[in-house]
Picture 1 (tube, one colour):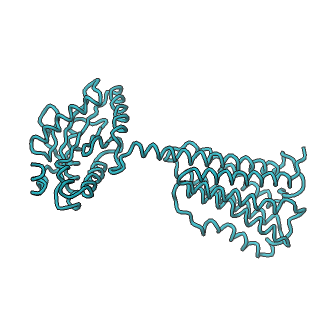
Picture 2 (cartoon, helix red, strand yellow):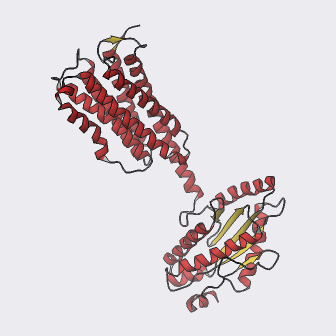
Picture 3 (cartoon, helix red, strand yellow):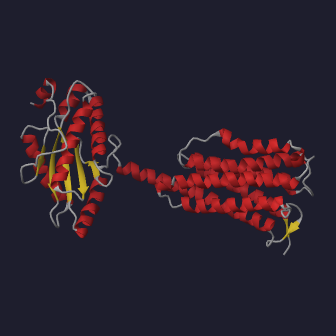
Length: 406
């Protein structure tokens, strides 16, 4: 079946324009949607370029519209690369975006290129394939966010980059004619249909990825304490229950540390809520540095925190509690004229024990730490082991705080 290439090109231009408008409307309804705006610009640029080529009976060097069209076709894939950068919050280098078009225009000043349309097209498709592969690489770099829509985008970009590179080779050997009629079985016919699929597919998955990221950010916001960056009470208990269940199934130990900042109300009353907030932030930073990536820590009350340590016995949990105590006190020395301290209770989960009951046992040890003078770590049910990797002494609170506590 014969296919009229100008008609097919105009159809592609229309699809590009519709996709660009679709992406702009989607971006207006999504926060942090700069990636979609860049991709919309790429589609609209292509939509503007294609009609300039569609109805020429030949591509000749004396046609300014053809030069403008191919220049725009060099900019379009560069904008896709910019979109990939913006989607993962990387800085877009405008110089890189314009480099392909600038190099093509520079090459056009060479007589051999200016008088050879096939060579012009080959250069255009070569630059396009470089940008498209670079965009695929950028999406691959951000794969750790586990957004499922990212993978179809990578596949579509790689395929489109391969077809662009193949088209460059075909243009170099003179088998890629962009005018007249063709069939779907020819390279030029297949490339045009692949481009249509690429435009539609990438527009859909770009929007899907932006929506996924927005939902992920909402989930993170709901599960993360905005002040300390630790898990919220709800998130801690939900994830903690899973950790306890897994430890029960595998027979591995799991321990919990319950922390409570000493005299925190006195710090707020004496120095104000600003320094008090800084103390909470300091604890969040201190405990995060001490814990492993597999550990779970959350803010479960105003100045109360809990850390769940899978694959950790009572001795290891005690050492973690001591390290956190010392690290927190050290970190708070630069906040104000006081020495904030923390007390902690440590407990190990027994077979079949729930997270709630484990927290209650640790709370009893915490109460003992408070009653024995604060600024210490106590182990549930027995005297604490002697720590071998953390100092145990810290400066006492200043008199202003002592008076408030009393």
